[in-house]
Image (cartoon, rainbow, N blue to C red; front, side, top):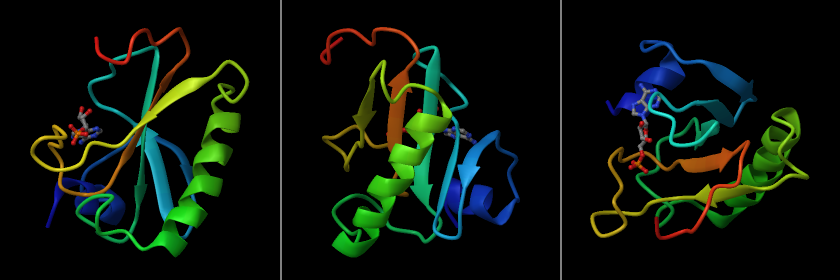
Length: 109
Ligand code: AMP
């Protein structure tokens, strides 16, 4: 079982921001900016390449709820998903990084 599935099952602790039946948002263990959270579907999909479009639609609404809860919906943030080897994906369970709480800077740095 992957590490994020273990988080969903409660076998590994997490600092939860928001949760519903389909998705979980929690703080990244190694934050790269003032605010750095991860949004995952509770069901396991390896990456963006596998996720059904219908679930992505629901995930969009959930991410918008998260940005409001973190109060970064107006100041802005960066939303990233890494996909596979060349995308630099380390955890093989679809996740979106939300980075904000400050100017996140150039995308390539
Ligand atoms: P990626 O390189 O896109 O696969 O990013 C994986 C992210 O998961 C990294 O930013 C890690 O810091 C984060 N991460 C790994 N394990 C945990 C954990 N147990 N709790 C919170 N974040 C984690």
